[in-house]
Length: 317
Image 1 (cartoon, rainbow, N blue to C red):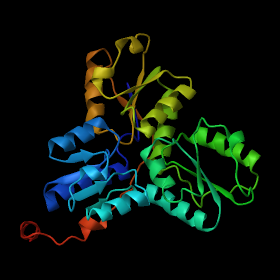
Image 2 (tube, rainbow, N blue to C red):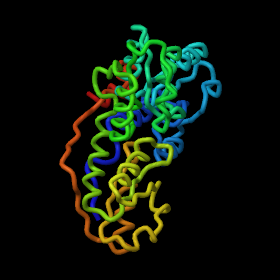
Image 3 (cartoon, helix red, strand yellow):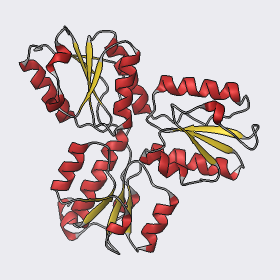
Image 4 (spheres, helix red, strand yellow):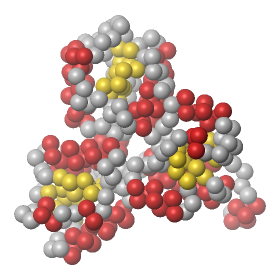
């Protein structure tokens, strides 16, 4: 069995989960979270057991209560709705998603048509679209570029969802450039470092494994992309929430199993899979990959700037 490295939590996910836990500790319940804080059902279930209340929309949150926005970001419309209900907002949006929002605002102000490459039903894309709906056209990765119509082909730019497949995105961008030769790229890559690193690690894994298991939830875009990347390299790959999803028939002719995890999947789930596979005939474990991640994001200012309680002050003195 070979473990991919890096795998699992990225800095944005760590920040989002820490935000929820710190909010609960510093502010106390009730704490509401709009949508899933990250796209992993085990993470969400654990936080729910701690007392966190997850809601789909803000009208489910009592007026004046405290609400956390998920790592995927929200539109200005959602922020306005929160302010209208006098909600105490803590924003756990990943800083790399915030970067894409700022780019959308900048290019819209310049009068550009923005082609946003991403999955139209994903929370991140919905939030970005809301920044400039009159200027943004969402292009699903499976969408037809020939159908795109823009007012001025000389003023067009593309942005991307942060968790897309690198290879697929390159192909889409190449086709966009053929159709719109003057299309501009964002100032820097939108696909996040963690997405790129995990996909690179899977490609390395694919050179050694007979089958690859990806730990992650079905609504996790980056986890699904890892499965796609492995399959594109010609290796059978399967997305699993945990050991309960493993079909032993997948492993029937596999001498070497590759194992990785999406950016929102906890390492303890990987450890459980390793233990399970140890018990069904794969006792040896090694790791492949040389990329070291040292990215850290600070907590939202709503928490870092909050005065410490008397109890907390005693803790640090």
